[in-house]
Length: 477
Image 1: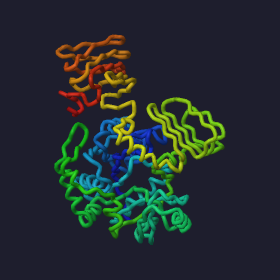
Image 2: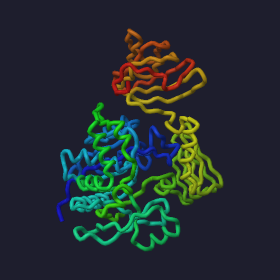
Image 3: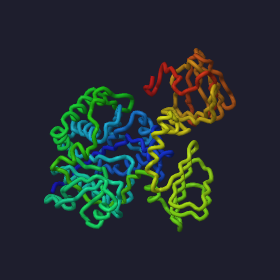
């Protein structure tokens, strides 16, 4: 048995988290939110694999829309990633793993990578570390390893792994006898009592070259597309952008289907690490502290004759409930979800219907984050829109103009540097300016404190896409 090699974390941060709507939105999904603790799920995942004695710097694969938020959240916890790779379109986990393996193989052909979703909870980090070392040793010996979570209930929402014989070369590592789709309740009950079956965690520890060799054998078109996309990639600020045309041509498939179910190298480490994939609101009810009646309240609540329910309010409003059971209520500043716990999975249908109706609630919150700061919509009607804008220290909005609207800016806190045509001026608290339609303008905060201002837009169209960017610090022009 060889010594434990360095493990290179590959953190997957491309999901939309629609099962946790209205808290999770396409532009600000669950992995970027403090869902189950004080840090965001991405930050918790990165911290979990930050011990430099065991792990290399993480490689993060993210959605282009989230790039600045991902970078800022890693910076906030002082983690410098090996790279942040931007996918032009989601192609599932097998291509993402291929891109990571190809990048690592350029400098470390014998590297071991740990493929980790960014939205999982792991309560027992000591057990996780021990399992990682066990899996890495097996991966160095040629196995493609996944973690199988020991089930504590007959769960029908997870795939299962039937574990086979233990590998000769490593204790607590078993061959995979079979991968199994989500079972019905009777089958899940049988799996629980047999002791042979584990939940499929979706976490993998793989030798880079072993994975590439198996992908070349089992899905050669995918590997070729990934090589081409990486070869044509380019750097953009702190990010690596995969080539759009070649990556779009890549087949979409999970690592389970593309490789693990077909290879004879699949192995599983049974783990008991306090794992939860936070796949929906019932999972958060499971994780939360509860009162004597089984209620979890992450809100200002008034409950009467209520049992086994979950209440969450991120907008500070009071939630009052009477005579309900097994219910989930989630309130944000622009939407309220009410559902039975056993129907919470259907929230995806609501999100799809909101998208079909072109509703903004499907995509972003009222507070929208940008690389320079954020804005919050206060009011809007047919010919006007009112925003509260916060520009972080050093933040610079793009040099831009509008075809359909004029803007009025009132500084309420901090100091603004305003470009208005050929004129550059400084505005302080309680001072204002007017930007006529078609005039080139820019807003900057050169101070050490956040800049707060109220913006009133007036015109025949006040949509967010009425922006002609002429120059942009963040590469959006």
